[in-house]
Length: 260
Image (tube, rainbow, N blue to C red; front, side, top):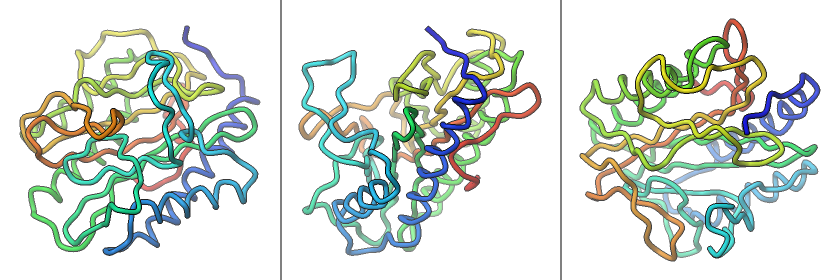
């Protein structure tokens, strides 16, 4: 069931979203070659708890798969061919030329915020840089369609059309989602679709829009390493950006910062 948030609820989501943005800002200044992904995770958890909030992802179990091992970290840190859900580790070292996608969720005041950015470490291949830039722009284009009166898949189509214009692949089995008092709510927000289809967008809907775009031909992400991290089928790099937004009548309101 899709819920329409009151202005009071949206104000609470603004607080959690702003904290997500500050965590990602912090990590953007601190991330460096030679660090482990666990170091990023510790930094993020300390910052979140210091601000009287709780990591949304830590110990998360999806309702669709209640038998899965609870997620063991604050962040998802996914490097190169890892699309999403990379589990931070003391053994995973960030190297020159990596692209590192960091996904962060915060629960504060009874509501969640959720956002992701892909960071570039050092000099990377021009095509990979284009992938990162195009994924960020595809998110901006998707958000521009999150206007009351449009259809859900207007968001999806805007993301897909832009990504595919560069010959990149859209990861089709990983999607965005509604968000609020639950981390994952209805509706699912795919990154591909036909314009003028899907549910009609209404003011007060809160969505986490998150394109995951790949350099190769992969259309699916496949799980490995204990069932959490999902990688491209062909081992080619993937980028990921995400914002939590509110559907408005004129222009969507972004709750998780201004990095676009």
